[in-house]
Image (tube, rainbow, N blue to C red; front, top):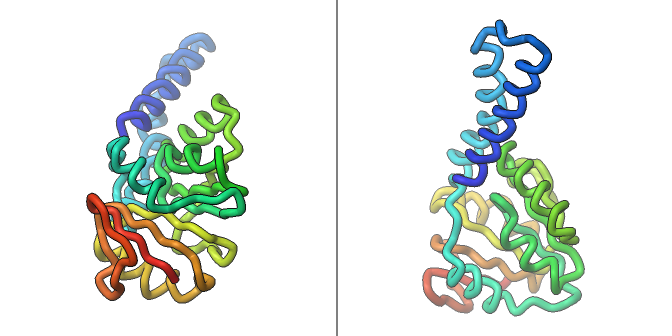
Length: 189
């Protein structure tokens, strides 16, 4: 979230600089406040329906990637991808890596990172609950317990057999993981 906040501050500073350069310094602060609130609302919605952006430690990411046992033919989705770290890491070795993010600042930050790093990973703006994951072979998620229950009820039944789901920190209580290591849970459909 720190990167997203920094990104917002940079954009706001540029916007204020442009306004000052154009001689529009008499603009009401309300006209700056309202767009910032509008930018942040989808992220707050996502935080309550799936989970807030909390970056994982590098060691946890490495565990998730190792347990995923990625192949060049894999199609990987990261649900609530945040700044896209897992998307960009997996994009180096898989057929397709897609992350969904609903927080506008995080989405923009991820898109900017993708462009600067020239990653073939794709960050898409969207609600994770309204996407189609039928082509997925691997799904990464870091969702809160209630969101994991919802994942099991709504998304799990739509996955094709053999799809691997890697959950960071929170298990799907209705299922027995095929592997578990350092609070990373692996499920096979």
